[in-house]
Image (cartoon, rainbow, N blue to C red):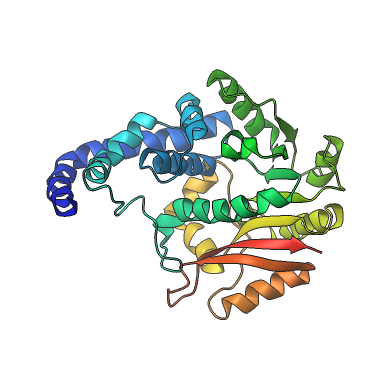
Amino acid sequence: MNILSWVIYIPLQILFLPIVILGALLVAYKQIVVSKKLGLSMTAIEVINGRWTMHIFGMREDKATVSLAAALPNTSLFGLWLCLFPLWIKHKISGRLALYPRVPELGSETIADLIVARTLYFDRVIERAVGQVDQLVVMGAGYDMRAYGKLQCKNVSFFELDQPSVQTHKLASLESSGIASEHVTFVSVDFGNENAVERLIESGFDTSKKTLFLWEGVTLYLSEADVRKTMGDIRNTAPAGSVLLADIYAERFIAFAGKGSRKKTLDQTGEGLDFGLNFSTNHDEVLSEFVESESMSIGETFFMGRKNDKGPFVVVVEMTIG
């Protein structure tokens, strides 16, 4: 069946090429132009598009993401279907994942695997750690829908932090898609002028309870000083045993994604890149030195692309307080 799937896929993909291009243009227009008009994050759409794709290809059940994506004006599910239909047909015939989306071997990931692999690595740590905490805080939540899926059955309190414009739009989209959100405490934060942890406490966060902080897809947009400040605020607020789960990018990724046409695209929605670490050599030591300098200890790590001669381009890292 796998050979048959390739025999069908290749001519179908060639035939669909003009349609794929049309779909890509439609998705890009919604993601870049519409997001800019609404004053919303463009990169947050990349995440929800990736997770919608993972659900459609049977990689990760996420009905909440599918429902929310259908209600968002700044993405196009029709455009995504136009792009992915030949690959989806191949998957249905063979029952296997190939090209995109896929589950790469740890260390062999490419930048094309970023959203899919990063999501899976975060999920792996969350699944293990969530049973050991009382609160879960999603920092810079965007369109993350983990609090509306199977984690909702866990005995934890949920908090989502984000900018007022993003959060207002998400709440309206949740309501229009019929997704209940009463179990989540939404904390609007002007990150440039307000202390996120202080706003969290004002909203009912209990500083005596162990907490899992999710900080996905955020650090690369901040300065090193802001990253360290946030880590320090969490360390000084949450009790021992609390976990900060984050992704930290290599300087080479920041350089790659922050120049040329990619920079112009990010500038459209004011999402310039800044902080990264030099993972070109001794990436384990570089990460350990950084985390330990903030008086945290390292748990599980996933260095993506570490088999590349230039070193990994990002790491998903579990950091423990106390």
